[in-house]
Image: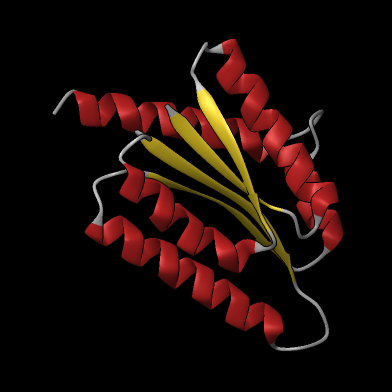
Length: 137
């Protein structure tokens, strides 16, 4: 089973990413469970908790961090990137980094739009690829 953790912050982006991911996993007949948390920062601890249950063969974290007028963007990006990389180094469950980090909302929408490059589908593809790779070891 695949866990999808979606940050609620920037829902106009994260909802589209989730839809692309869910549509793809459904098409591929892959079971998944959906979880939500307030923002990208919280995806780190949520991923860690879900890994500890042993129920999931892959975790997809979905979020959108969009640059604003303050340094907050830099700190959130660093925290999430570092946190997910630490989890990936200590656990053997693949964590798919589905956190968009963009300079503008328009750039985020371009990467999330269902009729364009929706990265959500790619997150699902990567999760399946990694599960198959790990099963083959």
